[in-house]
Image 1 (cartoon, rainbow, N blue to C red):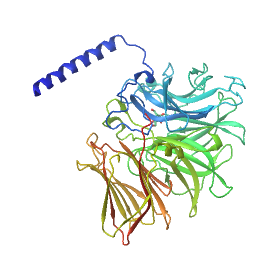
Image 2: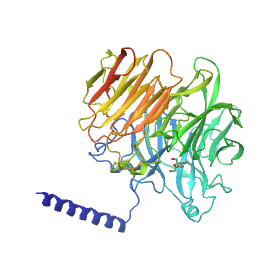
Image 3: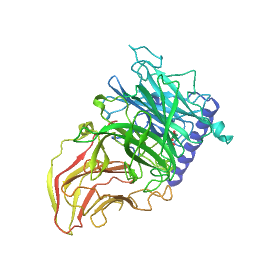
Image 4: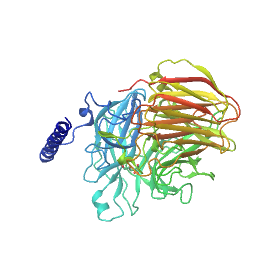
Length: 524
Ligand code: FRU
């Protein structure tokens, strides 16, 4: 029997190889992602059910986040031919509600200037670019060209900026014949343009990263750009290259005050290792970003929220963020087979004054609640030193939510194989800990799970606060006090978690108010 199975395996391997060889010989243009979906897609092991992931192949950063005519666009770094990083394209998906996504054909392909790296998209309402008309404003994508030949030849100017436009709300794209619109005068890492319209100075502003700092450029027509200023030498974290900037204005909650937020991803150099996203709160006068912020702040202390940026042109000016739910330290080795990686849940950003400083809150968009079956809310009490276990079959695709005043408990998500994800909060150390050391498959990359991830929580309120945990097959997202603190991490349990154990490690009974455990429906 065993040898029979082995023979079948060997022979099917032979046919797969034969198929691959013949494919290589009659090389066809790459099929759009949309056409590769079958009934088995989204049923694979580890496949997220309520997060966006590409139908197949490799994905990294979110790109070109823009809302136009009732549609949220999500473009993304995509290599359609493998589940490893390669010549970058812009994959494309759309959504009406940021919950369900429809796959679209690939939007941008590499060309003679190079691969298509990260960037943004705007609605050119007044047709400043001349690509459309005022009645038919174009969508304009602004991205980095990465020339692999230049890189190989050890040149320093192989990253330049290009633009493309669409007159049919993102379905088809034309590259501008005057590309590149920004040349490179010798900076190796010169990329990831985020463009927005600045009402005050009445011009387009572009944030561009240049190795260890940010550059701000401006244009009136999206084509002729002038450098205005720089920011960031010796500010914030510099453990790695600066990537994927974003700059936007937010009202400080409960006041009329407005501040500007600058997001900068860095890789490596994040507090829990590898890739992470820091932010600065300050002011922007149309030309220059300034801040008196002393400490380094991070949008998410987990290991798997990188290269996140926000939507342009959203209704009511809500600021919505999406990050790539991975980390360059191991992104190319994770144990999925037909696709790689997912995006974080779309999150609403808000600014709050906490103590003397400002904190950027990030919390899942409310539309997500449409995926939840109405579950009962119950108050639950766990005695001092006790362990309380709840069994729930769908813990691998669920939300757990409650309010508490305690900062001393442990939540363990377990399966029958002894695998567990352990979340701990301790008032002594003022820390929240995420432990994925025995959470499932971890041996695909040394260092994926050899330490416990830590998040200092010294500014968590004294009274009641909300604990919200979302688990989706191969990820966990934790939000404390409605997004004051967030932690996102990938994990690969080889069997679903079905038990939730709560241990009270505090000195008084643990009250969990309005405890809800909800199953989330699949979006696919
Ligand atoms: C961030 C990043 C960007 C770059 C892209 C390439 O993850 O390194 O700086 O544009 O990925 O895929």
